[in-house]
Image 1 (cartoon, helix red, strand yellow):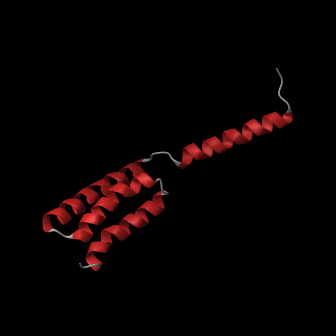
Image 2: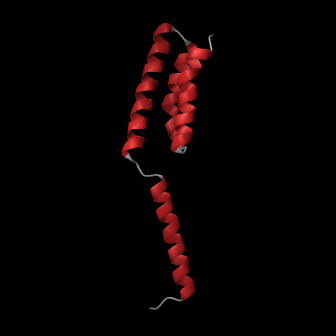
Image 3: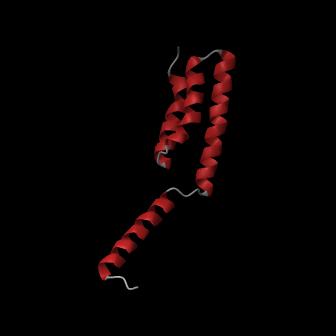
Length: 93
């Protein structure tokens, strides 16, 4: 069975798109360390907010725990997480 040039190009383009998608979502040491840091910050903010009855810290902890599940790019996750970690220091309720 021989493939035409058009079919070969089509297969190559699908392969390249698949490889790009895999490379984009790979777990690197840096991303694993960022996830570990965010998980510990999430737990800390949540426990502090619950113990001290601080709503902003409590919801920041919940948000930090939920944010990685949205499938964001790493830089977006870091920016959003930094904002949520700074929020209890600037918002007093």
